[in-house]
Image (tube, rainbow, N blue to C red; front, side, top):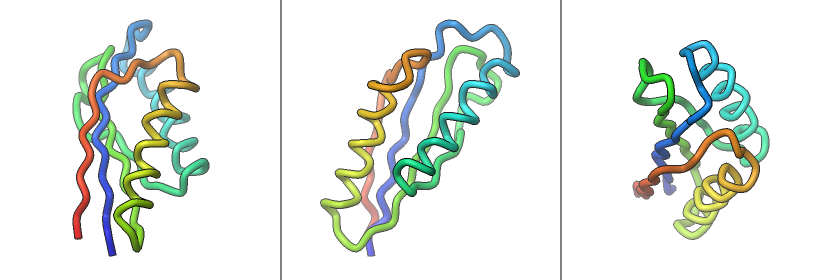
Length: 95
């Protein structure tokens, strides 16, 4: 069993309140779950309006599958969510 975790730091330049930030992140996290069958949550920068840190986790039987899934998640965010910008990502595989 392999657990893949990706921590993604996002910039949300047009955001002017925590309520607006939640309105952007909540649908994003739900969509990641539906599209990729992963778990996703905001894990840091909770009180910062224009930044967010989310974590995405997947459980798999193979390193390659877990890594590809997480890479696709990051690419999907960059391609489909113009209101957020991926600033950094960190991948980790746990055996």
